[in-house]
Image (cartoon, rainbow, N blue to C red; front, side):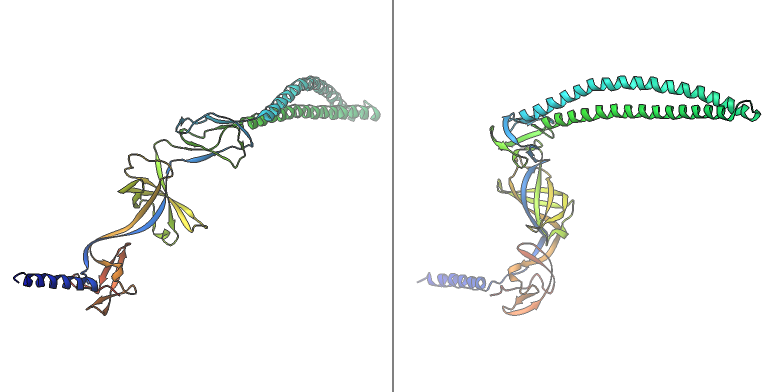
Length: 363
């Protein structure tokens, strides 16, 4: 019988606590609130890119393996190139033949240079005769017919010299053009043959080989994935509604499934100024301040981009806010408040509510 009063008192306190809990009454909290923007994406190696071929054909040899360190210009794949090799050999033979043919042009060029010199010498002689006769014509020493003959000889010599110069220039142009054209054709075919060996664009690490020897590939076939060794970047997507708040230099709090329960700090380094119309998101890049011990390309990541932080402010759970501008006091009395920052759980109260006042959860 002596135990009943104690049991009754304990039961009363328990029921009172449950009643308050059922009513959802709480006091506002004073502390720190941080406004942030959500972003999600993956970890990528710096300069990560997918290797493609510029030509189609049968993959003949895979010269590398996944996880291998590679250097800039290193051969990764070779594609069957018998036709390209034949084209190159044909161009080389054409170039050699043109060199032999050009010897004929060079001989003609030497002959033409001699002809030009002869025409120049004759012009000089005829011009000298013409000038002398022109000077003495006024004294009627020579006849009009003789003077015209001398003048005509001079004009013909001048025309012949100019024509010879033009022919010489044409031969030189022809020689240069033939040499250049055949040399360029040879370089083009050599370059085309070189395209059948796929090389690395820079030094780094080969993360994956996506094809096997004997496969028929095209310029649309991904061959491998390459990136910078031990250097990683976060590639994240931000919703278009939040993008105007994001700026380069802002801090991110990053979480990853690979490191559950841990938060890593990162910094926004780059914002791509165009929206993906399919996902309605913008892409940003960020670097870890202190990266995790081990990372791999394509690990998933989620981040909160810190927009601003306030300390020593009154906050309440978002669930206790009515219509975005009211709280319940005295269980069912609405009171208007002015709100400030908010995160995914709480909202800042700027005025209209004291930290000592009890509020109730809307039903």
